[in-house]
Length: 134
Image (cartoon, rainbow, N blue to C red; front, side):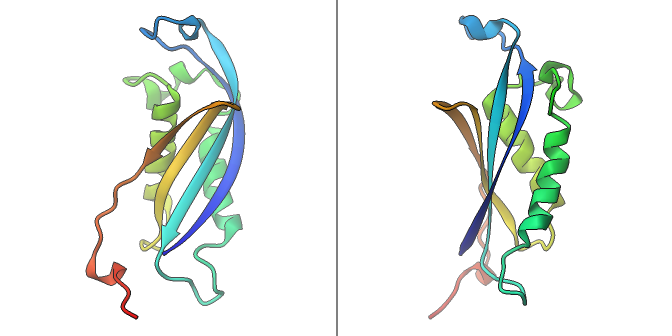
């Protein structure tokens, strides 16, 4: 299994409810996002996926969040824009975009500060083709 990681960032504000802390106030972060994708096979160039292609997909996602009030975005209408939900949104949306199909998002980590982050891990079903015999 091969795994590659791309790191990006964006700035945005959010407001969390029912956390009984100062996070209930409107506030912002300079978010750092780590996206890891995995797969069993390398392409003919010897890479899992071209970094520039992966970065393009991630950039398109992050641009929807950058310099925005996250609570007002459609993807967070029914969910609070916590670090956990941001990581889940990026992971699931990116997974639906990735081609070829044998490349999977393994996890997305969203950092809201240097000391606090949340990770969403996608559980993938293993198939017979995922098993390598040596």
